[in-house]
Length: 94
Image 1 (spheres, one colour):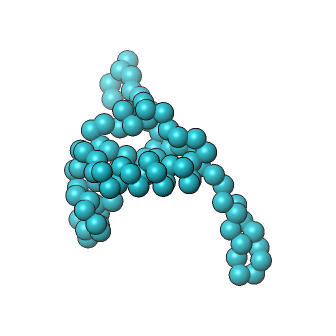
Image 2: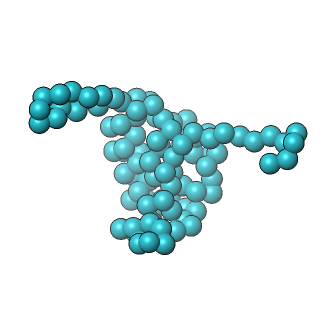
């Protein structure tokens, strides 16, 4: 980055390409590295299962726009519910 230039910080996300795996091994399902378009299946999983279950509010449209051309699989930059976990010893952690 040069002096005087500007940049935009984006909220975190995992894309479909991330799910495709790396050079040490491929991912599962129909993910491919360098994916630039979503699929009906994974867009539906994200929109109808992941976002309503784990996000306290749905990410705005510009959240998805700023990550183009990579489609968002897991919107980890949105506000997530805190889940209390009880260990076998009965110790709770958040």
